[in-house]
Image (cartoon, one colour):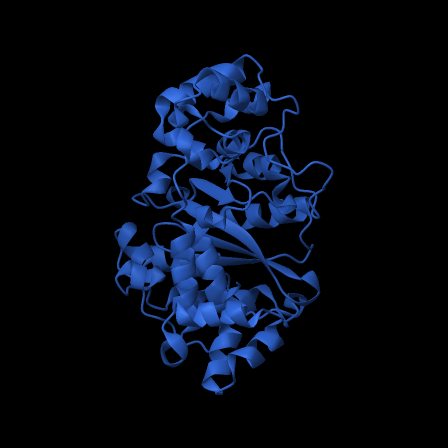
Length: 349
């Protein structure tokens, strides 16, 4: 369920509409809406933002895979994959070899999932080279993904990202994504992992890969060197020109597992906050870079619970060991300059 749907539920409850009426308006089953409301405080306490945060928190706790919990079994599977056995052959052989030991049984689907979702950490991604198809993602036979996503040669997986990015101790590691408005009009969002500092980048050239790479490169090259260490993105087609971006900036791009948005949780959370300013009904092509900068500035000056109720601007100033600049007296959507200029103003104080 999306954040926008949860907002509609919250509005419907505030208007004292029935759950069935809310479900009809969203095109959802009444039982789905009932479970959503009941699991998030009921009619009187339901809040869209809180419910969305709880949903993401639950999504980041997937069940541990069997191979990660059984290193002996993982070693056998890895050895058989190295001999070019298919996962189905391995699963069948294990049942024949260890008929009375269920702990040594694993389904072929579990092997595939462990290979293709590297965050599970039980099998090396290099083993995908021994599969007959050589694919690096799982795809249902005969079904093409609607946006053409698939394996890309030469990508760096999120599991290869520096450890300092994972613990958020060092600034300069960013997460990125596109947010779309009316008519598939895009804007790029960049969120710094340690401070949650936001930059919005206008995309007048649309979401073509070359246009996105050029726009992002122009934005990040305005930042100080200590604030540009890595960028994490999903496997959308808009980053197909990631090598062009890396050549222009020297910044490596790391890619998440397919359908794993929690691996860029800071960015996903910030995108949800952005919908308060950039709803889907707005055509982003009618907004200028200055408009996006003003929105980014407002969000960077809002306290965040995850930062101990400091603002991202304050957190950025602290990690750079400089005092934050007092908030300027600009009105909403009237701020001049760029998000990068706003960031430079903070660290230059």
